[in-house]
Image (cartoon, rainbow, N blue to C red; front, side, top):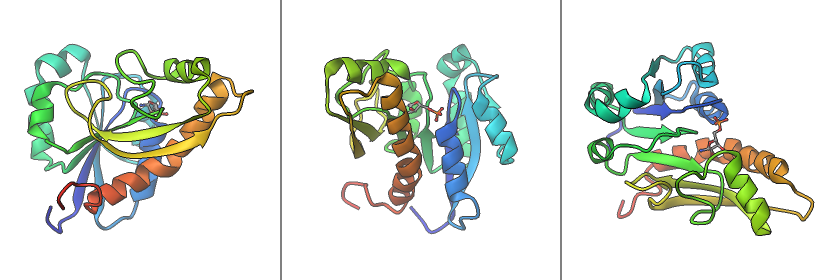
Length: 199
Ligand code: GRF
């Protein structure tokens, strides 16, 4: 990567609390700019958050995303996006998009992968699964995105302790707090090449 400002695109389908933390973290940063929020849900709360922070947003439906991925790739390329950050984005990323941005798409998963990951493991399903497993710890995994759900190379994991009395909701709040605290920082370090193999 060169020394020019790094350009980020955030993909989110829902509330977007992580997206907002990332926006706030990089606000005023001379080296990083959030170019746009991309969402497959026209009513997603993340779009209100984008508007509040004056970040442009782009929406599409599932079939557009899956069948006309090239138009989204073209848009991202025209914006010279350096890193695509998934923050609660629920659609599987098409291969053509992955191939167009090799090692440039990352995701956050609210468990310690490979545990409690894979198809269908999102939102409360993850925390329910952790709770039922009797695990004494959970946490977050930030990873590169490849062609399978939650299987790309792990960039960073942060743990939290699960107590016996913690129910799925408690676990969810503990994990979300770690996401908010660490995801922006991990992105920042990644942009500084900290996690790239051979760099
Ligand atoms: C987070 O728990 C994230 O790990 C998962 O989806 C959730 C998104 O939450 N991928 P929010 O939309 O950022 O509030």
